[in-house]
Length: 257
Image (tube, rainbow, N blue to C red):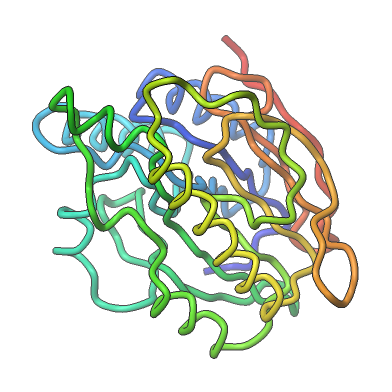
C-alpha cells in the first residue's frame, strides 16, 4: 500500500450505515489523493444477525463508490464472538473487500512513524444490558496479556485506542442510575491499563473514541505531555478529523448532508 499523505480518523459509528454513506461521499473532497483511508476507533458495528451483515455490505458498497477503505479497531459494543473467529494475530484482517479489522497490537509504519492499534473497553452499562437481554460480549476488555504484548513490542509514535488512557482529562458527567459500581470500576481499570500502555509506547499523539465527546487535550506520561484527541460518536460534528500522516497536524472535518 502506498503511504497516504493524510487519513480520516473517526469515532464510534454504532452500525449507522447512513453515517458511513455520508462519510464515504465526503472522502473524495477530503482525500483527493490516493489511497483514501478511514481509520475508525471502535464500536464500529460488528453485530450479529442480518442487521450486522447488511451494515457491513452497505459500508463496503459506499467505500467502493468512494474508492476508499475502512480499517477499524474493536470496541466494547462490537461482536467479539465474530471477531474471535477471524483472529489470526496482530495484523490487518479483511472483513469485506473494503473493510478490515485492526486487532490489538497491529502495527504499521508511515513516513518514518510507527502506528499501533489497541481496541477494547469496559461497558459501563453491562449490568443493564444483561438485565434487559441486550447484547454484551465478555471479550470486550483489553486484557492484561494483550497490554503486555503491546508494551513488549516497543514504542510507537501514534497510539490509536477505543478507550481513553487514564490521564486524558475527560469531562465526565454523573453516572446513570442503572450503571453498577462494579462496571464503573472495571471501566476505570481499563483506562488505567491503557495508561500503562501509553507510558511504555510513549506516543507523539493518542486518538480515541468510546466516550462520545470531542476535545483536544494533553494526556500525561512520566516523560511529559502527549497530545490527545477524543472523538465523538456518529451524527456529531466531532466524529471526524483529517490527520496529516507526515506531520501529525490535524483539523476537524464535517460531512455534507
